[in-house]
Amino acid sequence: MMKGGFEVVHATLDMIQPHREPIWDFASFGFPTTSVAAAAVSSIPRQSLENRCINLERNELSDWVEQVTKKLIDDLPAQNTDTDDHHSSTLQAPADIPMVCEDSFPPSLLADFRPRKTVTSSDFDELQWSNVNGGNDRGLSRLDEQGLSLITLLLECAVAISIDNLGEAHRMLLELTQMASPYALSCAERVVAYFAKAMSSRVINSWLGICSPLINYKTVHCAFQAFNNVSPFIKFAHFTSNQAILEAFHRRDRVHIIDLDIMQGLQWPALFHILATRMEGPPHVTMTGMGSSMELLTETGKQLSNFAKRLGMSFEFHPIAKKFGEIDITMVRLRRGETLAIHWLQHSLYDATGPDWKTMRLMEQLGPRIITLVEQDLSHGGSFLDRFVGSLHYYSTLFDSLGAYLAADDPNRHRIEHCLLFREINNILAIGGPARSGEDKMKQWRSELAARNSFVQVPMSSNSMAQAQLILNMFPPAHGYRLVQGDGTLRLGWKDSSLFTASAWTSHVSR
Image 1: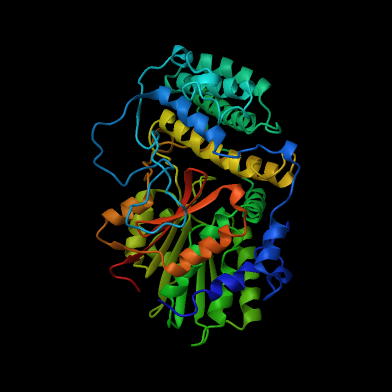
Image 2: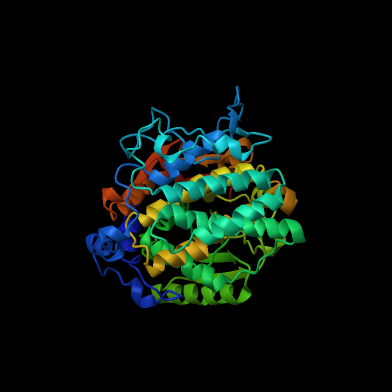
């Protein structure tokens, strides 16, 4: 284990205070400026109790979603040959692995299921909100009956879409869009509003045969930064990945980082600072940033170059305005003697990398010393009904986590829900899927990497665990975030649901 690994924690905690600028201001990267406690206080707004979606004991909305979607399950598979391919969000760590929380994320019936071939609205007749938990409404009493009936109608609509009954689906969507508002106090109503909008796009796309929305990347990046400011999920991804890369770069003089979707590059100043202050001296850093907009990539490169210059660190930035799976190895300017790291923070906002099989093939050709992978515990594969059930449970949990301490009228909350979470929901339901993209998506990348002879897993270190725990300590336990270690990975979730999993890998022919 590398000595001084905790330095990355203390040096970067001072750099994650909330700010609202579209591009980060270097003044916010002072070393050091505030304590952990001060950062925690400043990053967590205190709102009045009556304006929150209160979740005292359990994730109520996603719990009810899981109960009601059982009616979509014909039966569970009698035999599961791919035990690692749990694309739902409730995986359990092995008993012999130490865990940060008191118990692991419990197993879920949504982990593996085969939806009914034909389901009608009569299948939902018994789903009265008062007896979802066998007559015990202790965990549901704070959800209003209207919100639950809206979700039931949403499920009926999803079934209609899955069997191509678009006329009936359109009728139900008209009702849903009139009844549900994205500005409502109820988390359930907000979720229904955004899902109904995405499913309306799905129906229209099915009729017209188009499914390619325009993307305002600046708006998406600003919302992504707001999400980073108010929740631990993005910080978790940045801190754990930076630690794994830092350890892989130990005593290496020339290093190269490929970021498969760099956006604003918010992750990298923290790593640069630690590399610049190493006892053995700073390395020469080359960074290849992938993205869709050359304008935004150039701006990110300027910001990173200026920051590296201030640290006195030799730095090069190479922008590539293409998807990683659409380039060949000659476009990556690798030099002899460079230690290569590939970083991929996965999301569902848009297809950032192109065909999965081409992305995998290029990774094998490049032979990186370290791949840092942060995955959403959510599958993009399978049928429409598969994706609907999985995404409804996943995003209900995310909406609940935001609603647990952000007021319904909080502008950052609306920005995150509208510009990030809705865009992901829309991409999964209205645009995604093998039948529409023509490409099969890998359900879980870490399972695919493990199955290849080209890669071997690098267990996340105790320093990575310590950083993740330090991030969680910025948020009071009542907010419900939980950290689990197991199978060499770190998983961050909310209440009983795992939402993001961080893992690291190396190539057998690493540079």
